[in-house]
Length: 143
Image 1: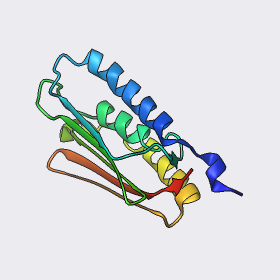
Image 2: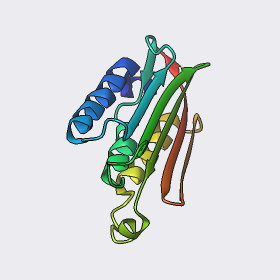
Image 3: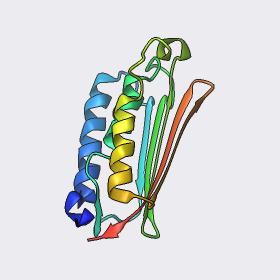
């Protein structure tokens, strides 16, 4: 089973992510709520589809009042054949305990990461002090 066949051009995935962010931005009244940056060259890179989006959807779903600055921070960086993805959102701790579904999508992503990237990725997810932090590092296949 060639894992590469499960992958799409990184460009396509980034476009998908940016389209999603554009839609969310339209809903937000505050342009400073979302911080997004991308760095590095991803022309020749392939990535498993729909790996980053669930973290971003989760961030919007569980974020606090959108009037604050930097409520969600997303960075994508490509260097040394690695993709580094960080997604950070501030959330209301009182709300999260009510929502038992928090993280169902994330277990699916973890299964897919294990399947496609096996021991070529690192994922850390933690939340403290009303900040939910995702840090994902993928070792990339060149196209």
